[in-house]
Structure formats: structure tokens, C-alpha cells
Length: 243
Image 1 (cartoon, one colour):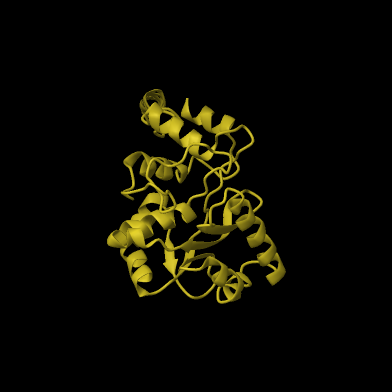
Image 2 (cartoon, helix red, strand yellow):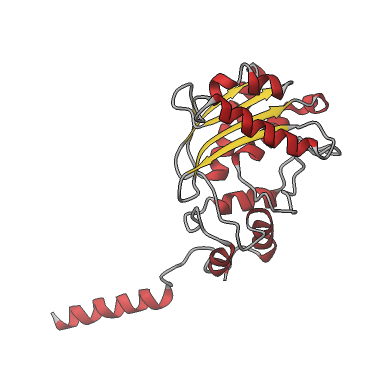
């Protein structure tokens, strides 16, 4: 019995010595510095910022015509793999609504308002938020190109996203990348204080000619959805995980 105990104890010691208790890629520095820095610049540029992400399955509805709905369905596995979350396309208990439209004002105040009322408290709240968001964008003398409403749980996980995406015909020659770019902009919450954007051009960049998603952006989105990174974490906590 004593010999058996010693062998087991020795084996346990070797296992403990060879494998650290926290053996993720974050702890073992298998993520390169460029990716870490890009992650911080996009999601946590200031000490006041905190991580916000989905902590539950996404129940999505896509409006805007069959071409957008079918394109989203074709890319659903791509989005699921990137954020490590199940995405269900449904008409019931929707917590993510994305509308492709040629007139975001019409959608906000007419046809879209029936959907917003299922997410937000009152029609007046919707109109007030929309006006404030649209007016802020118009201060730069540019017509608002998209408006996104978000609601969060107390731990900063996302509860609701409603996104209006205005159409730009110059990208109709590549509708697949158009939809991918628009959905990623709505699906992943970037810090509003961030001066650093994703490397890939979005559908709202005036000079964008190619909407292909860069690998480093795929990497930081996948990194955001690692189990070690939780909603509500700030820059200091994330940097400690990166060490």
C-alpha cells in the first residue's frame, strides 16, 4: 500500500510540475503582441472601458429582402465559429435584429418601430434614442449610415441588439462581403472611445473598395469570446491575463 501511494503521489507531483494550473494560450503567451495590442486598441482603449459580449445564444432576425436573409444564412457558421456562440435564426424571442434598408428613418419611425417596441420600453424611448444618435452623426454634416441600439445585463453581457444598416449600391457587386461587414459591425461591440478600428474596411468607410475581413480582426474577435475573457473585465484585468 505504501509503495502504491508513493507511486501515485510522485505521478501527481510530476503532472503538477509539468503543467501549470492555468494553461491557456493567454497564460502561455501563445498570442502574439500585435494581436494583443490590436485587441486593447479596439475593445479597451481607456481604463474606464469594460468588455461587453454575448453570454448566451443569439436569436437573430434579418430583414431587408431574401438576398440579405439568404446571404446571412450562408455565412451563419462563419459567425458562430468566430464568436463561439450558437446563432438561431428565428421569428420568436428575438434578441438580435438587423435591418438592411434604403431609408433608416422610415424603418425607425414606421415599419421598424413595431420590432423596436418588442425590444425597448416605449415608442417614445425609441424615437428619442434614434434622434440623439442620428443628430450626433449629422453634426459632421454626414447622413447617418447606421444606427444601433444595445441593451446590457448588469455584468455587461449583451441582452439586445437592434441594428439599422443603410444600403450602399457600390457594394452590390459583392453582397457576401457587404453582409459580413455589416453584421460584424453590429455583432461585436467596439469601444465608442476607440480611435483604432478593425483592420477590415466596413460598409460605412467612404473609401472602402474591398470588404474582406483581415485575419487579425478574426483573431481578436475570437479572442474576445475566449472563456477566460469575461464581460465586465477592464483593461487592467485583461492585460494581467495577457502577461
